[in-house]
Length: 76
Picture (tube, rainbow, N blue to C red):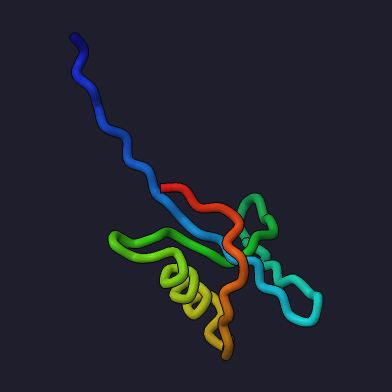
């Protein structure tokens, strides 16, 4: 029997930032630039809302008000 190797998976969140019917997109630079919404990996024992707030404050330090709307999808 072949030994089984566990795979590591990272779980993350993304936030759609809406202000006055405008949506914020971030341009990721690099070899293949692309547009994305803010977000990142969930730390151990961190809730979705906590992760999203932390990531928003890291990526958008000038943000003053964060209000969580409807959660579109969550599994776990």
